[in-house]
Image (cartoon, helix red, strand yellow):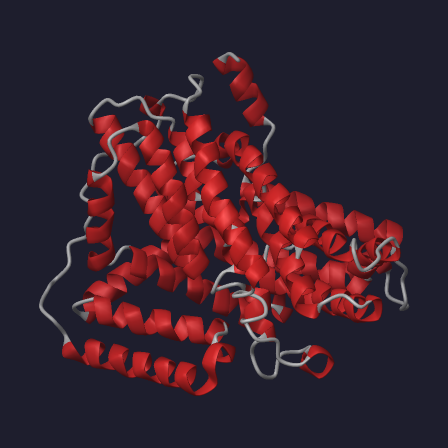
Length: 435
């Protein structure tokens, strides 16, 4: 394929912000066509009020997700983590090893925390690109950035996954219906662990195969300035921050010891991240510099989150999501229901690329259906999680920080994330059928 044809194909892929706006208009039109006006208000105006309501419905969750991303980012650019980055760099001596290593690192870290995995993998890809350009090594940089994003294909089944953490939290909005669902039955279930290892093995193998292709965008076309990996940090220890971090850490460990795995939820994950950033930064001024940098990397998400929350509002209050999900439920039985739940979640993720937001509007419908059909509630939760995470590979919303750090455009990684998504889809369907 010539460069000219390759560029023309990529030019039809919209930017993440353009996609968000386009999806808003698309969902608005769908609501006009397929839902009914139950008030005296002019319906197009009422749909716009649904959009507005959706923005504020997700305000608390938006803050939780922003904290996970920002704190994970801050931890990723800390001095201890940067030292680990340097050790990894020393062991990479070929383009193939670069993409395989980056894929493994991304998947492992995103399972622990999607924010940390996303940002650290982006920094690793950037550092490898800088090194390769400096040494004039022929490297497929868009592929490298694409595999740095693969952690987002396991995050919802990981320790920072929104839906499994939400249902493990006391007082969640479906507690009266399904009770508290332990992470032992979701995140740490045999099905989920098997899927994690299948992806951990298969994606690096695919990345290795893709790295052997000769036709790719040359590294010289990217603006990669050779820079120091570590930030200038004052190493004079401020014991106030250290003491505060240890205090938060002890608090989190206490909650974990007292309540066991059921204590793991979004708030506890954020508590541990907050504790760690205070512990690893030697003084408060350095910490605030890192926070400033992390917030700038999250700026794209902060402007787009309200748009997608608005889309969620239209889907929820117009009844579109009920219509869509019920159509799938009608053709389901106990065997096929988890598969259809996976497919529906994968589609909805295009319009609501927020695991928690998606759970808020799709979760109640799927839980009612699962209990009426006689399907395992934890399995249905994970089917939704798998569907939500798999289409991240072609929904660029969460890739915004990665693209910002690496200087690559969304349309340049899509040719590589699509085959990766196909492998992840087949793996997800396999475990849903076998378990």
